Amino acid sequence: MPDFEERELVERAKEDPDAFGALYDRYFPQIYRFAYSRVRDQSLAEDVTSEVFFKALRNIKRYTYSGHPFSSWLYQITLNAVADHYRGQHGEVELEEGASLPSGAPSVDDEVVRRDRSRRVWSAIDQLPRHQRAAMVLKFGEDKKIEEIAQIMGKS
Image (cartoon, rainbow, N blue to C red; front, top):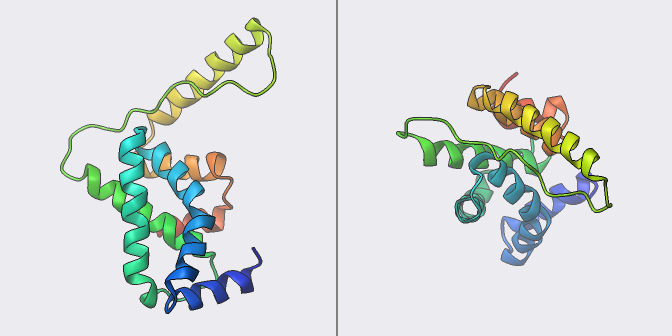
């Protein structure tokens, strides 16, 4: 969606729930994926995603365009919702080691190598502090640009 169309839809959503529904439909999959990448639990990711969109709807009139996509605001709400969930808990979130199989039919050897590589990468990422881990997921899992990651994470 071009930037000007997104801004127009956001402005309409401030007054029209159907317009917010269009934003929800557009951004739900990526916000859910990001929430899931942080909590690694389907039910909890659904709860976090619901909370994100509830907060976005409740606060959309306060949203102002700052040169960054609307999704940056949603990602920031998601990071805050995940942090709120884990606030007060001791320990870190465990990252799932494997990923689903690719759609092709790789050889068993290729799949073993791929899974081992994936396990090592996730193991290394799992050792990072939460904010660095979030940045890695945004960059490589969500294919975000560095500037957008900085905006989402509130860094300059």
